[in-house]
Length: 323
Picture: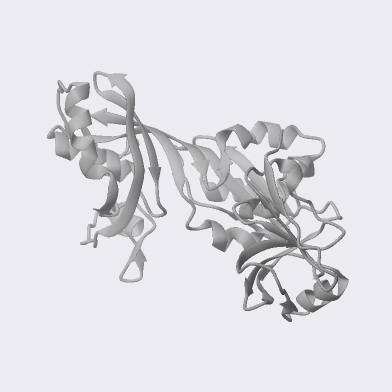
């Protein structure tokens, strides 16, 4: 059952309708009338693939040049990788700051140059750590913290990516960056391997978090596995394997509509005169509509744009209709 709170402004002079939803089932959102490859594909990225590998493969599969992904996953990692196709690529910028959630395996007693088990071993030791000892150090990693990006990362220093410097045996000073760990939970484990659930902000390196927890425990540590279980509004339950995608007869049926990206915002339907103004880049009158951001639709149900109402005027933040 869909739980919905709707407010209808039915005035003689009013041409818009606003609906605010508490939950957003897929039926709430609308694909473009044509069935071109415009939408968001939630991929369960396989281990061994880079995020760019996935995007490149799908570029060929869908015969669509406009392909982008929402948040890089390390090659060894698996899990949620939203891939934006066609006109939906215009929404990537709104996904950059989305929260992420991961299930990671922390391996204690092992330190590597990449901060995960794929790197060269720098230190290895026998460990005897209890669950209580691990729990005791976790609070210092929750909330707003500073994190030094690893040398094996795409962060640029002096115009060069850190991994380029690291591959040549170099190391440079890196400034700590502010990140937020919204949730950090020890799920269990034994011996050297312990599972963590991490919900975090953009820019968080989970392998660095594992490394730093190991340092706090005094035995060292690195990341042994990583699965992204959530990225923004999208979860692992919605993700498709590459095998499923490649074997699907109707691959466009796997796409989520781009308006699902903006599920946190209420919908607003405009009439034809207002639609024409918005399609031409002009503002439309929005009297009696509360201020804020909206998913804006035509009367035919086509998702037009992400818009904002201020001072009785509706303006475009980003359009998504085909031109």
